[in-house]
Image 1 (cartoon, rainbow, N blue to C red):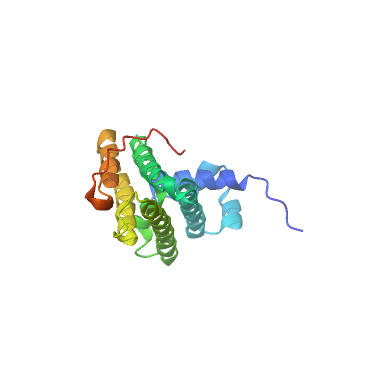
Image 2: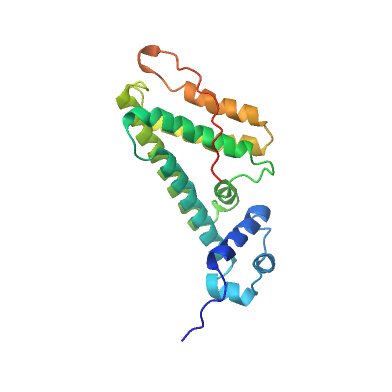
Amino acid sequence: MPRPRAFDERQVLERAREQFWATGYAGTRMDDIAQATGLGKGSLYGAFGDKGKLFHRVFGDWCTAVVEVAEERLAGGPDAEAMTRLSEYVHLMAENTACDTERRGCLLAKGAAELAHRDPTVAARSAETMTALLALLRTEISAAQRHGDIDSAADPERLAALLLTVVRGIEAVGKAGLDPETLRNIADTALAVLPMPGGQKRPATGHSPAREN
């Protein structure tokens, strides 16, 4: 009978994630992860496999969490509140970036930038995550169109792609050093350009202080 694991797997994965997040995939050695987790390399290999497999586990968990946050903010609810849900989600992403004073960015973006061109698992998981986010945004935009908050003649797929690009782009420019107020203004502007019926002008949405930890 195999011996039961004498460690908290979730805690080990969180510490491994922090190490990969801080130093990147190439800059992280199994010795670093062993030191960060307090486990011997033999235990790490036995429980999670090599460095690549461990990163895939951490990266996959992160991608799942990214989609879950979006689902919590966007999925379901009446059409009358769809525009509010969209606004709160876009502002949440801007606020998270504004609060990232260490400029670590998102592990999804960092992992994809470093590995997607040569790691099929990372490339596929990244694309799957973006596709899921796009679908959630598209569903909310369609709901807002049904309620009359967004012009029904507009293509929800294109508008969803625009918002997704803005959300992910805010993180990139925030990491590069743009100040928090500029990031919040980007979120405001992206929402303001969503077309209203009859060519009406969308009122300013203001900033949302909500933050998802």
